[in-house]
Image (cartoon, rainbow, N blue to C red; front, side, top):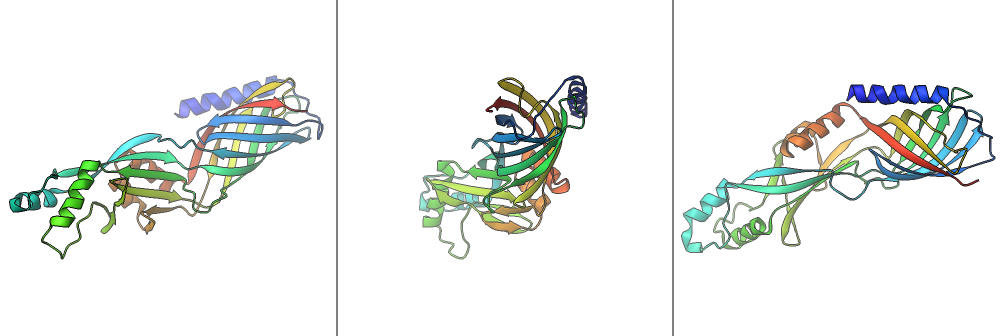
Length: 280
């Protein structure tokens, strides 16, 4: 990964120094469409100085799982109860474990304001800085959504209806740091959701190569950077989780690595490809 980033940065610098560029302040503007690790985006750009370009835009992540993981819930107690009470005639049987199929997706949805600085008068290499701002305070940076099979949820509902033990609530729940986070019913399944929420205001620094306002009709930019955030909090079933590390273990191996990294390093790397269309 380090070699790839080093190669991209070197490419940006070499291409930037060797290309020629003449931006006229307040004379032109462009519309851009981009694709990157942050999702999709659109932006407007206008040069305000021979070396400075102001940009404003909006980014969002597709509503699609980036990876899948399994949350395992121990249900041996429920299986044993069913076996010990054959007269209750359970139709839906528990196994030793119930698997909650989970999907991990990014929840990035922000407006942005950026400044590109071109240090070389005759060049396309630039350095970028600015801010992202989430319009909704509760928009998650990361969202994990999981659900049980209909058969497992039907087994739980039947167990609740037929159980003779009224002192203990029957539920399918994830245990995190000694606390239970129970699945809730939706569409005849049990659902568990977790949201990793950060500050609404996030900072960005990056570098790239390419004109924001192309000489011709269409231009291309390649950019690497990092989004910096703070005040990260993890919620499960709308309840705040005190220990992100404990939660990471409960949510599966793939999710654990991501959550532990983001908890330790509040920086989200970005690689962006952008097409700019000159409008004036």
